[in-house]
Length: 113
Image 1: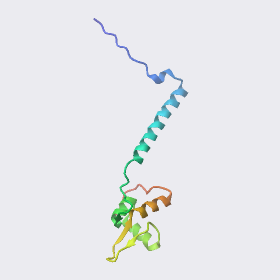
Image 2: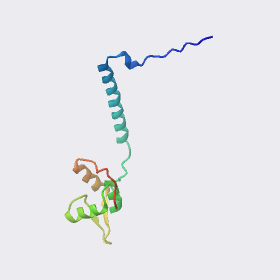
Image 3: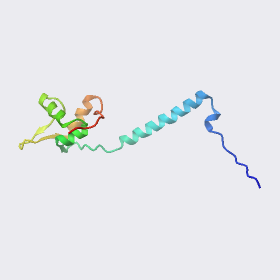
Image 4: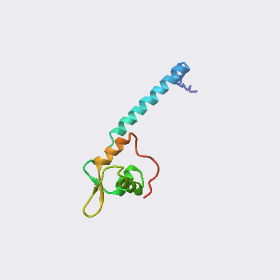
């Protein structure tokens, strides 16, 4: 008894090269939109009313703590609070505003602290 194996043709082979390219591009575009919408639904780890120290803020912005110190000295960077005990804190909403004002995301290189 012999068995015959039937294989289905690749559906894309039914189309012209131009149509195949268009269909593949659409699949990738749809996937990118899906991923982007999923990422947007992820919670932002930065809470607006929470106060963050320089280390946490530097990690979130992906810049060294010394950069934050330099920004404070020059009146740049996110708004900060200097508490009576001398510690510096950043409100989450101020850090988010700073990022939004830059018109770009924090740099993606490693953090030195």
